[in-house]
Image 1 (cartoon, one colour):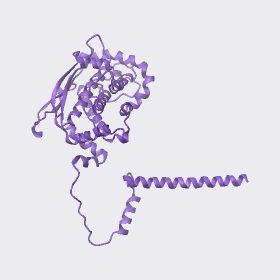
Image 2: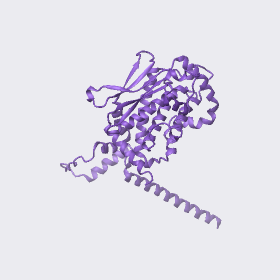
Image 3: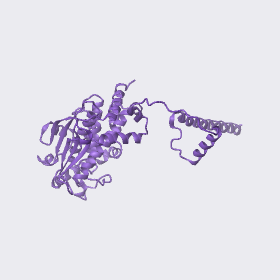
Length: 376
């Protein structure tokens, strides 16, 4: 009897497995019906099947024609239907076309770089440019003075390693947890953040290339960073630039205004992400300070370009002044706020009106709607 029961149990299991396989197939068919048909297949079998199916249902002779209807979607609507990579490429082209750079002096290693933006009101082919931000480089001797600060952070490596490793490729998740951003509800916000990260990267990497600052571990073989050292230059920090760009954009979208504040969880997180790069041994504190200024400037600039009559604040960071007194200066949010308040390290000015980016403005408007419907 026990053998028969065992056989019956096996048969029941086989039936369940067959049902599961059928359910899996049904799920695949349902997924195809929802709009992912043919995605990623690209096989000879699919091509052969499509040709065979056509031959079986299409009659010979002249083809019947049914002309497409008139265009009813505006450019933003058509943009949203494109493949994600094409959509990003178009939007990045629109945003980056507004920017230019001025390196001082031209040569092997510059002492400063100015990010320029087109002045509002000028014709595109005869545009004039005004400063968006200027970043001045510390001297190599000043970088060397900061190496001891970097070494002091090494004691935190074990505690922070999970964060450091994840943040090498993903910082948005750390902000999403603060604002309870659920990806299915925040698709346009996600697109805005992706663009913000791309623009922040373009600006910071252009500055790194011009300013050619050595990494901390290039001053001492005893520093030994906890992660592989990037091949690009140290100053300014790209992670700090990205983190403060994201914090600024999310602060504006969520209605907090965009100005860094001591009690802002967004800007606290941005400062922590920046500091983690010093903990890892790959950045000086002054790198983070410069990156934070770039991020705040870029975040505000992007928000302004989404408006019909937006204005962007202009910034200047005096990298050499960061360490003047009383010795090497660390980076954390309180230090940044003191510099922004006016201690001679950061200059701020009204800047002026910017050119609206029509496609990006449409995406931004969709993101703003998402924040009004978060709990719907």
